[in-house]
Image (cartoon, rainbow over all chains, first blue to last red; front, side, top):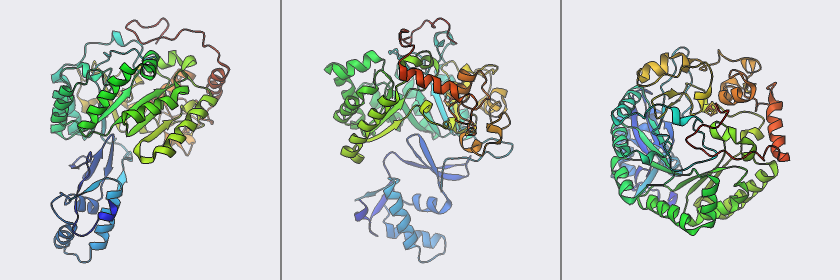
Length: 93
Length: 377
Ligand code: SF4
Ligand code: SF4
């Protein structure tokens, strides 16, 4: 699956995982069977955009616009790769 | 990004992130290693649907987010799908632990539609049932059918088998069965010695040699199956030199509600003396979690005695298990006697030595039954 990752891939939250905002923790969390990861703001900014419809390029463009930043592509790709490895994300055709 | 280890803020503890509802003690099985309290038939009436839903709402409002549904056998409650639906609506991640008995396709479909996130098929088997499973095609086929259903509904197939002296030599067969059943995760958890299992400990604790062979079989399966079937093997802590970080600290993350509404900081804590565990019938979850003396008793480090009090490990293992300390040393605030710094370590060593020598095994096995055994409690 990792080889399949490109700028036209459409990542989505992995099957069995759930992303949500937890006000008690003041953070987004990713829930999975009997466990939870508390996300830092940049991880949350990426994951909340992974809806299976947007491509990686769309996500990068959107992030750069929202945060008035440039050259985020490397960081975003690296994080998406890590999230795929952990099954937090899966790729949609 | 950090995994869930919540630093206890000075003063206010964090919310009960992990809520476990033990929906019922009723169960069609009679397990020798059941950790349910030995006097379970004396506990009060089960909470009704409305009461469980209130528990869910109050706990969620405090920040609870992982929900475990267990028992007994939770499927004996016919309002299970209603409870799951409300939990899902509130934003809980819902985990069901079941023996699979009573899990028809119709019920599974209803649970899935209600938003159930995860299922763990648990071999809460009595020895007799394990033998059936290993020897009778009929029982195996029943379990396989449930496993196939679970996969059909796109849940990962997680199998949990409690291991003890009487079945540990069959680990090879158990894993072969799990493979044929298509399990993706297998947890071989050694019995924890509380409740019924404590009464039966002399019969249930394996020898070191048995453990070694079981780990060896596990290793071979791991090598052959790799990520196709992941196997977790949990060694009984009597064989370790340091205790488990019980519940990551009592009153820190975990809140269990018993069938009759009694709130506990761990499933076994009811046995701890001198604590009046509050009931959700009389108090709100918030006041129980934050204000009740029973939940504050073993919170933090103030209750600790030496050697824990000055030990650098205390913020990592919280001095181990209070129930184990109480059962073996008679005082819950002592260090868990599994710890090799505990002055009571010799008690654990003796139990292990007795298991090696095969002592005390002429005593009959006590099966979980509706009558409390003589001298229990
Ligand atoms: S002395 Fe207490 S805190 Fe230290 S390792 Fe042992 S049980 Fe843990
Ligand atoms: S106090 Fe002991 S029995 Fe209770 S959860 Fe902790 S480890 Fe388990």
